[in-house]
Amino acid sequence: MWQLLYENLEQTVAVILFGIGFSILLLQRNLIRKIIGLNIMDTAVYLFLASMGYISGRKAPIVVDGVTQTTAYINPIPAGLVLTGIVVSVSFTGIMLALTIRLYRRYHTLDIDEIAMLARGEDA
Amino acid sequence: MTLVHNFPFFCILLCMAAGIFTSVLKPKAAKALTFVVAGTVLVLSALTLRLTLQLEEAYPFIMGHFPAPWGNEIRIGRLEALMATGFSAVLLISLLAGMWHTSNFVSEQKTNLYCIMIDLALAAVLVLIYTNDLFTVYVFIEIMTIASCALVVVRQNGHTLVATTRYMIMHLFGSGLLLLGIAMLYGITGHLLMVPLHEAVVNIVQTGEHMGPLTVVIALITAGLAIKSAMFPFHGWAPDTYAFAPPLSSAILSGIISTAYIFVLIKFFCRVIGLDVIISQQITPFLFVCGVSGMIIGSIMAISQRDIRRMIAYSSVAQIGYIYLGLGIGTKAGVEAALFQMLVHAAVKSVLFLSTYELVNVSGDHKHFRYLHGAGYRNVPAGIVFTIAAMSMVGIPFTGGFIVKLNLAISGIAIGGWVRALVLIALALSTLLNSVYFLHTVVSIYRRPAQELDYPKPEKTLPVVAVALFTSVLLIIYLGIGSEPILRVIETGLKTFS
Image 1 (spheres, rainbow over the protein chains, first blue to last red):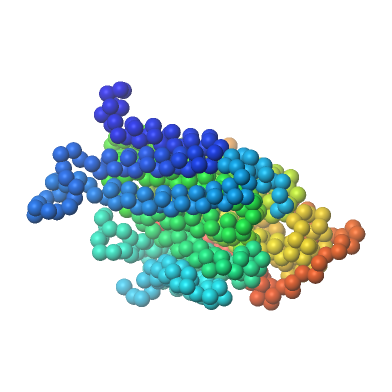
Image 2: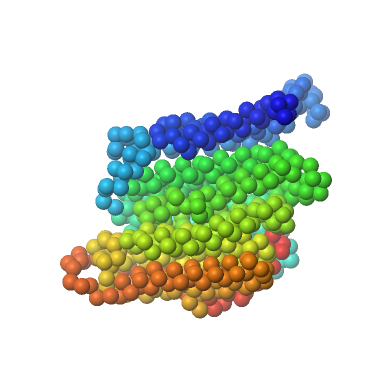
């Protein structure tokens, strides 16, 4: 069991990080912490993806010395996916931060439950 | 390859290009361009549908220069073309009926942004319908989420801010699960394109190696998409979002966007994994239970609402329950019923949100039922349209809702055993509950006000709005009377879908 976890160290760490990020996003009431949780969660998936594409002993897939055998390079697709994913999570973080600024200016707190209570008192 | 073969790709490109051009246009021109885009997409999708009806098989369309299994592609079949046509028709009708009053919710400077988001949402819906690549699914789901958040928060008050934050957090959960699921699936199969993926999955099932991770993948992706489509018990974000967003946004979000997620789920079930594997992994009973509880509890929650828009939002949860019930039955017939319900839901729910706005508008902007008394007389077209849409929700014959319930019952009966009993009891109970709250609403809007409240003089309903609302009523009735050819397209489309 431990041997198996150690052999797949990156994946194990990634899943633990995902769990941490997930619970922060779910359980924390502070909006900024929620955003941090979101980022941890996304980063965990990127670690998971990147570790899958890496093959030890091989190089990044950039042809420099005329070496064109596929066996010389790692799998470039996960890296491409991670890049796309990073763009997505940056835009989400941006939107969440913008929403947080709006909410803070309006309610002067970052606590989502408190904000929801204050909002409920307003006229629809 | 003829010109028509390219139309799905043109539709997607058109929406995205229109989004870019909209940013530099004047607000009026931006609105006009949005109409043109929706109309063009409808025409092109209808032509694609006509083409696919002549073809026996679905055809792939390579995006970029690399063929499968390396490159990216979209895949066009009958089912996809039917869904694209249905959704773009509903979008066009919603725009015609809802665009004129967006100025009450959206400030002048934000109008362009609003139009861009509608274009982007349409592009994302089209991509999700047509794409054959799992990672493209993820990217466009995120684009759709961003667009829908903007569609809600564009009305600037505290309620929409809170609702959007909730919406965002729940959807980020969903995306996180989905992305992890896709990453794991890529890890065990080495593919992202759906056809080679399916071959790899078949291989996994045959050899039995990596069966555990496959189960986890199915669970992760199902949960992610279920959260995003407001399946009970993950519906927490839906009522507030639908109730406080501008009516046009609610119509698009609830009618088109939440069903597009379910279409992706069906695609994942049928094309990537295979329905038999899904059934053997015991996912369908879970969807079945969630669907049934959503149908019942969504309706009960709807009955307890005093605000008409929240009531319709909760009934939306119940309607999504019908779709999951069809999926949960786990047969081809069940999936067909679910697909038909997606079309009916899109048509009915959007018109309910929009006609409700008209009724609220003639009642001094009050959303409580007691102020709505007599609204059906103050705005006659909206009253009639609301009544017919409500009849479809209840499942009166000659409307789309009836055919849905009929098909769900038939596919449940074919199974036998406790499933049959549960399907029939759930359908009967939910029909009863639906009729309670919709009858109550229809009676309220046609009841004479107790004392003549001093309603401010409302704006006159534009003829185009009345025409659009009546067109959607025709659509609902067509789905009820002329359902036979549509069901046949769904049936034959599903065969070539996987």
